[in-house]
Image (cartoon, rainbow, N blue to C red; front, side, top):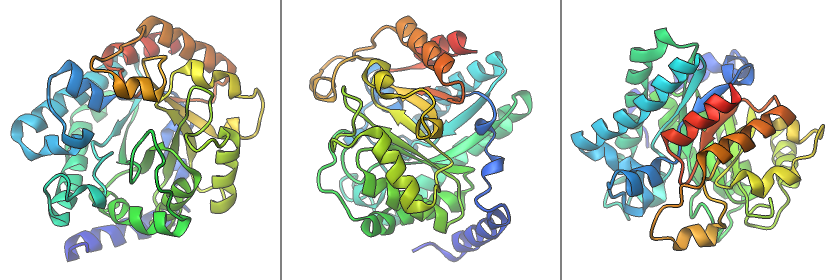
Length: 330
């Protein structure tokens, strides 16, 4: 349950945003190119030598050293976006911070809620510091899957997914996010549930699907069918969709030029490696791939689909990859 103060803040935000009917016009990345960050968790574990239990970057917020490291991480992307004269989406370190993860992390639900709130507070402070020197900084509350980002496991009903994810969505909304983003969605019902939860809170939401080497969801669903199913079930609630946790070579061929569903894809957060999820999962060392090749493939995709405005990274990527992508595409 949210405390009285959080509930009051949430009510004020909901009432304000309802005036704009989901406030989609307030998302500047719908109109121009924005960068976002890279594979936060793999960067911290493999490149910075910082352990993240259960891949939960929310644990960084439990110590002053962790907070400093997280701020340093985001500053790199803020400075890049400022140099490139484009906007930046700051994605909160809350991917693995929904209710089921409290117990494995040794936290009470209240403690996990507090860390979720702190994750947004850090981003708000960074926006206050950098915002006046950049076109725009958007704060996104990250929602991860209830289970694994590669394996759909036991699939919830749409209603079950909405009920489960609403709690974290409420906490992030009350902390003052501009939008929510569901990252590494492996199945359609969970994506629908999150979209409905966001709609009930009147907060804009982006849905990002994980795909395999054949461009299909881990459930076997075609990406086109997944997007259309979510739009149909939610009256096109998502502000836009994204593809993440896959190399561009895994999904470029399934993107149909001029197709209505492709026009709903607004962002890419690709993996550095061409390997499959199973191969990546089994690695003891990070596969950074080829940043220049990755950037060239993004440039090709942007030429085909200039409406794809959000450019970032997922597993194996770091600031070097996003710098290469930015320089190739902007």
